[in-house]
Image (cartoon, rainbow, N blue to C red; front, side, top):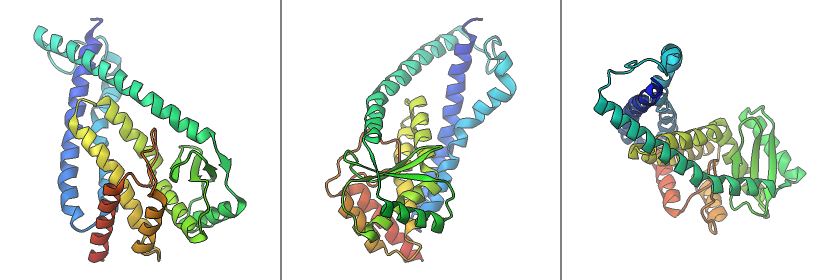
Length: 283
C-alpha cells in the first residue's frame, strides 16, 4: 500500500508523455504546412497549446484522484507484479534524471543571477524611449531598464517584476528603439513565462527526445514571431536584422538565460531571415 503512489506516478508520467507527444506531433505537422507561408506568429501560438497535452492527465488527477492517489491500488490500471516492478524501476530512473537535470541547471541559474546583480540603471533618455514605446504598444505594466558590463546581448526577464537589460555601449537612438521594441514584444508574447515553463517540461520528461526537439523549436519560433511583429510597424526587415547583426557580431552563448535570447548564433539568425522573407513574399 505504501508504494502505490509510486505506481500511480509512474503510470501518470507515461500517460502524460503520451498525450503531450501526440500534441507535439500534431504541431510539427501543422508547423510544416504553415511555415511555407511564413506564419511565425500562428505557429508560435499553436506551440503554446501543446502544453495542454501535458496538463490533461494532471488535471484529471487533481479533480478526481487526489484523495485516492496513495492508497488505491489499480486506480489508473490493474497492475501485475511484473508491471509493478517495471514501474518501480522506471520511477527510480526518472527521478535520477530529474535530479541530474536540476543539478545541471544550478550553475546556469547562478550565472544568470550574477549577471542581473551587476547592473546599473539606464539613463533617463533611454528610459524615456522605452516608456514611449510601452505606450505605443499598449503595455501598462511598469518595466525597469538596466545596463550591465556582464550583459552580452539585450534580454528581458521576470514574471511579476519585468526587467530589460542592455549592454553598456553607445547605441544610436534608432538602434535603441529597435532593441527595446524587440524586447517589449517578447513581453507582450509572455515569453519570460513560456521559456521557463518549457524548461520545466523538458526536465520532467527528459527521457522523451521529442520534448527536447520541440523545446528547441520553441526558442526559434518565439524569436521569429517577435521578428514578424516588429516589422509590421514601418520598420523594414533590412534595418531590423542589420541592427541584430551589429549587436551579435561578438556574441557568445549566454549561459543560464531563462529569458528570450536576442540571437543564438549565425545559423539561427539566417533561419529567422528566411522566415521573414517568406512572410513578406506572402504579404
